[in-house]
Length: 417
Image (tube, rainbow, N blue to C red):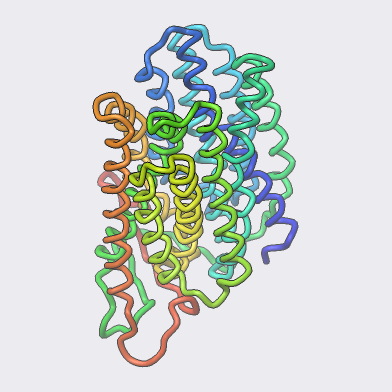
């Protein structure tokens, strides 16, 4: 059973962990580059390395959480995040800088949403859907809080001092993770074959398991790449469109406000909304928000609309990324299955900061907007296909009330989900 205490602890930990890890590059990256004389490629290459590490360690992390629970794994992640921030703060050469990002990659996979979602699924089974939505409320404010806070700390203490404070914040999440329950929901069984069975639709119209897994993977990969690119470059993108640097910081922070607003609306009013329907709405909102960036005038208004409504769509997407597997796959092996399906998304997301940097160097902010719109369109197409596959076939049948059956996944080398 998932208690209110568990939700509160995970929600607060997500707010801090996202702020001091995933979002730190947007604030501290340019300052490190200016101080150390390193190129943008070298700076953002560290962030890309961390995301690659997240992808490589994703299947193992999912298995560990299914087996041991989030309490142990996420607690280790808290300590690793602190070590990584200290390593970045002490970096005097590129080797130490990249080593710190490698450590932060493992830490992020151990502490961020996908680990938290798997932890909740292990404790609550398919009933974890509401709790998944609730913990994203605070997590969505991470950029809103930590981008301005990071800028303030860097101005007062320098980027090294600011990262040391971030390390202290990371350690503060350790008691939050230690408060998570040890218990698991139901009986878990080991996966041993490739097939992923789904039962959210009648047997006569049941979609092919590989197609469901592929569409889910493509959708998550596109949205993760988009999120990764904009997380690293949103402030620079807004500056390139013509906003002053100081204005761009707080306008970009509206992304977090939009995320939390959308998630609050879902928690309060979306109880009867099917995950597939909510997912389609989110995927539709994202490309519409990006179109606001092409309006141009008034620049402040169009930039604010882009950030807020993109944040709203991305906020809902984060929820459905956690709740859709509860519908499509068996929750007892949630961590293992999602761990494998997320590997391509992490690898593509790792390329996003560099890809956006190259696009913006050659084509400016407009080029980055076109790339973002293309990724959002791919995700929307996959969401439309999933909704079509699970359209009602005969009589009313709620996908929220049904759980899929997952039998397994397997790597090319060995049988493991």
